[in-house]
Length: 97
Image (cartoon, rainbow, N blue to C red; front, side, top):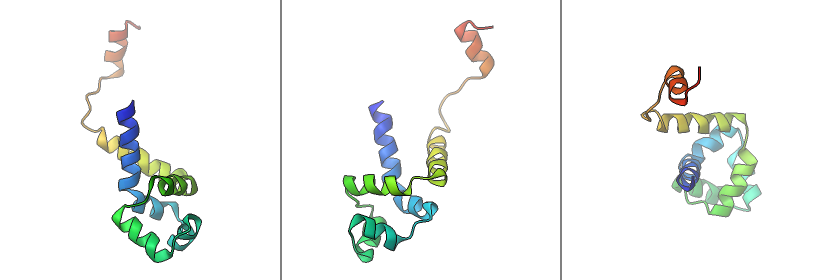
């Protein structure tokens, strides 16, 4: 459970620039919300050096369906090689009909 939480956080941090672009918010708007200059915001975005508090604020602001879809797709890509079973196999293993 903890490992998944860390992976989700890492996914957000590592993709924050892309998430911002997908969200549709402008850098100057987000910079203002964080109390940063646009230049400082852009540098932090490019270097991925936002603090935990900044990431939390950004996530709350940019959260929308497009961002959620992007994160879901990224998680699915990471799990592409995970072992899976068919519905039939699941039903058989569980003793269901």
